[in-house]
Length: 115
Image (tube, rainbow, N blue to C red; front, side, top):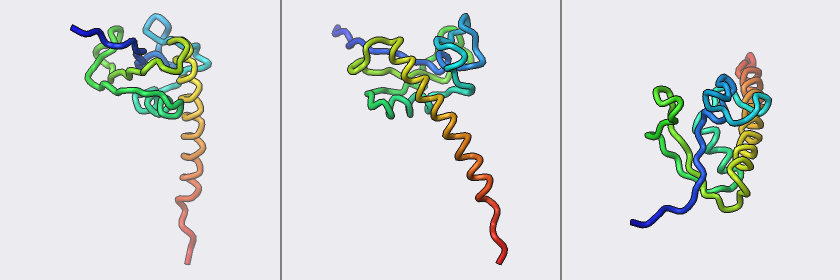
């Protein structure tokens, strides 16, 4: 049996602001994101130009009843898992800020001018 290459595994629980460190959050609350999901982590990995694979059928052991999956990241170009988690959390926070600004812009543009 061949061994798989080394890889890093990221769960949405690592970045969730509502969870405590004991429940699985790996980043400080100041860098955590509320309502973190697989798509945000995948977007951050894509933005960082990392090779990744999404596994929706896997569960996080501390939250097996509510976990939605995980992302496996190829470690090339990443110094350590801690570095990867920090970089992904920074990108996902920026994504949250851009979502807020686009939502407010959409709200303003939804008013149709009178003819």
